[in-house]
Image 1 (cartoon, rainbow, N blue to C red):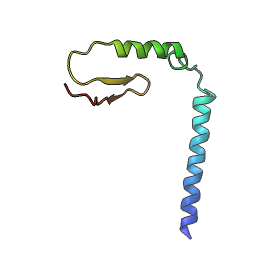
Image 2 (cartoon, one colour; image 1 turned 135 degrees about the vertical axis):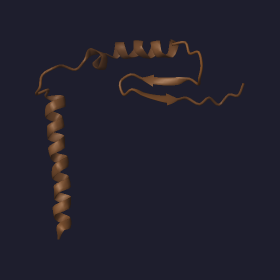
Image 3 (cartoon, rainbow, N blue to C red; image 1 turned 45 degrees about the vertical axis):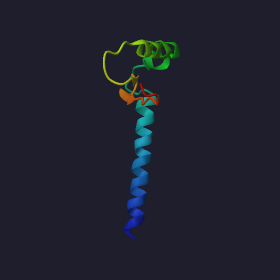
Length: 80
């Protein structure tokens, strides 16, 4: 009996979260614009070139993603 209330509340909360996210992010109700560094593909390509050309003094190679600020370690299959 209470299961239908729990499930409907969860679905309702996801619906409200989606509407709020759409209003704030896509419609920009608080103003502002999308930064050109996010929407400009040429900027993204130049940033990738910079990060791939960046000299490293120690450690294994790392692919840097400036948008999500996550670093992923690349494991090479070659042994020196």
